[in-house]
Length: 501
Image 1: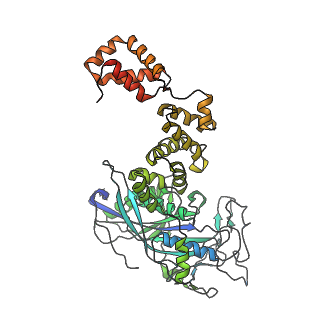
Image 2: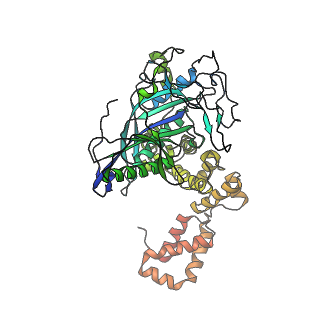
Image 3: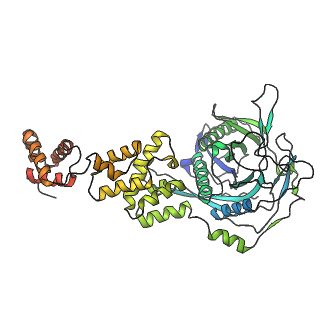
């Protein structure tokens, strides 16, 4: 492909070196396992965690005479992903044989797509921020292509002192290889790109994005150059399976290449591995080029061909994607861009929020979901799917505040009870006597007692009315937070002779 530089050099992304500034250039090849019950060319299961070599058909094991048969659902999933990436869907694509030899590749070749992929150019918009002014920077990252291919098996070198074992459970599993253009200029951009791509495929339901299970992993291409100069020689860091590791690998590799170039050396095009324990990359092998794989069309598979009706039917049933959902939350619910970004980061969080917000104030619902619920889940290391507080329970707490049955402070205590013990919020309030005190007579009595007991503080308030808040706090404390805060504030000001603003 012809590489086109679409980015204007930005000094805030430059890396200072001993001889001047440098710019890192990053492109990524992400392998995303297609969500399907069976493999790309066989009926074997794709279920994760099964015993070694139990999800293997005769096709996956490359037994003589076995022929591949395309899985139509995998094709549909690839097209859905292409549509989610705003990409060109190619109505004709071809499967090729990519020839290389390794113990976990029984056929001696991988069935992939080379010159005619199923999906062409697209784009992803990433957002960096917020900065100190609360602003976000949107950056468009180009997608070069998406093609379908089968995964290889897994070689295990730690099971025996002198031998390696091979597990073919992954052999033949459908992968979407999503290739970006070299449009990223920092590790932060690369992490944001991976995060966004992972979010998109999860929304679409085309990949589960579970990087710890290997169902989404990235080959990261890194090069450095003088700002705005010619592209440098790239090194590919293989199979990085964590967003945090992607950032660390880029930071280390950029520094390594800069050090070599500043010492007068040259960068060898090679494939490297990232060691997360040492936080460094190490050489794996010299980088292959396309001709090394001797691609040719697979003679056992016909070209994939479909029409506009096939594509339009899939487009019509696409879910609302993160960018569209974020824009709707800002427009219809008045949320800040930051809050909307947090809520749409995962489909499960967005779904939870929308259930809570239905028929309620969106901003209030967002505050409770982001600050209270997600904050509590982060502390305990739980995901939104594991939340002990259901949307109905959180919605009930918000309703109790709106009805002035409980105060905001009591609501926090009630949330903790529901989080740790469960139960119906309204019943808990009733059973534990947590209702807000709205009886002005009882509140007035509490205000009188606090004023009478603190003459020195009364004198200070006469000189400085803003200190009246101290009395409000004392009354709330004396009533266990049950007094209506607005009623307390009004009575304190009236008793102390402070005029309403």
